[in-house]
Length: 147
Image (cartoon, rainbow, N blue to C red; front, top):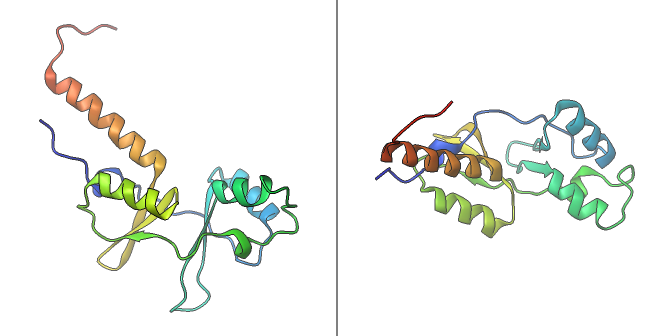
C-alpha cells in the first residue's frame, strides 16, 4: 500500500507573473495569453497588506459572465484577496482539496518556514492523484509489457 499524498508531493515551485491592482482586466487577459499563465499575483501595497490573486476563473465569472467590459473593469475589483495560503508541507492532500473547496479558490500559495515555496492548483491535485494511481498499478506488477 502506498503512503497517502501530501501537499509537498503536488506543490509546484514556480512563480506567477504579477499584475498591478489598478490595471484593467483587458491588460490582465493580454498578460495571461502572452505568458501562457492563467493566474496572476497581485502584489501587496505595503508590508502588512495582503497579496491578491487573479485567475482565469475570476475573469470568466466576474467579468465575462456578467457582461462587463474588460477594458473598464480593474483587477482590484475582481481579484481574490487575501491570497489563500498553506504552510504545512506534510498536510494530507484531502485537506488541501478541502481548503481549496471551502475557500472557493482554484489556486493556493504555499509557504515553508515563512518563505514562499510555490503554488498548488486544481491541476496539481489531479496530476498528483493520477500519478499515485499509476504508481499503485505498477506496484501491483504487470504480467507483460507492450510497446
